[in-house]
Length: 466
Image 1 (tube, rainbow, N blue to C red):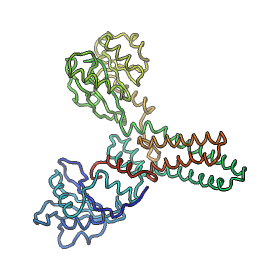
Image 2 (spheres, rainbow, N blue to C red):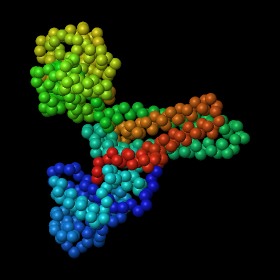
Image 3 (cartoon, rainbow, N blue to C red):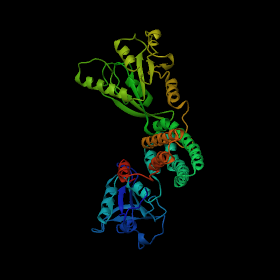
Image 4 (tube, rainbow, N blue to C red):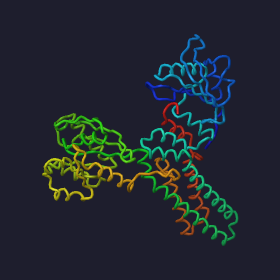
């Protein structure tokens, strides 16, 4: 669904983050971009309206009503269609810090520009046909990437790896649908119908294999895109906050000898062997009458339920107590690793007792104090979710977006229904309904068949100025 809206107006926004910095960028796009920018830009005798495309110019921004100079700037002029939005684009590079950029933005709005909505620049690139919907979503993935692998995956999608595959599959399905239509028009030829069904089955099975291959990459792709939620749990004072600090290599959580110091859930992001990990340091889980600590324990249980992986910490210098046993029971059906901490101290923990609750392969001995066992821990996490080293083939196609994964699953289900219909010798026009539905679902990935409401919702998640 790439339909250009009527009379797209000119929009403006600050495209760089707020706060102090060397430069800030104020961006405009639309039919009047150059005209509006020219009204507030001084660069000698030549107007911005007369300069060549894809050139940059030194000058000053002035307030046309007071003649006061606002800032010393560099202005880039890019004329349609060779721009990100396929429209005229102007970028004003001013001094960072917020004040100058905000004053320039206000002048542009006063001269006729409209404040851009979140993601509206990328939305225009989509509406004007420069990129499809999956590529537009990759722009935000690229901005949010926390590791090199996540960035490479987003770049592959932005370059069109997923788009090309989806369009190729849709074309194959479309050609098959056309052949079926011919058969429906001439139903008197039974031999032709049987032959068409055979061809349809071969094509549907082929597309099913492609979709299955895509879904195989979905789990890893989603982790690279969204991060892996890892909850660190254990009874109070077992070393959870110390582990968080050690993995982050900075003192994020307060560590004391007093049990119950951590009273709330603390989340921090860390890169472990290319995997973005959301480390969740939980409050020590125990029975308590302290109202604040009790709330922290409740949040810890919630974090435990939502985690992709649980790191259950036990104190190797002490025997298992009732709180340890309860946690071993609570986490038994979760994906977990049991960390025996404080192995630098004299061990009082019975391994035989621990192995009653957990396989030996899930046990890792560590010492947060001297970082012993950390390499083994990081290697286990990597192997558990990626079968070893995390690597991204830039030419391969990965699924990482929940919307895309859901649509591929639904498309595969439609084709499975079509195959069942063929095997049960159903009329070919009924079988065709499921094949057409698959074609439509794949179209939603690239934006060929998607509602305006969905487009608005997707781009509303973008940052302002992108």
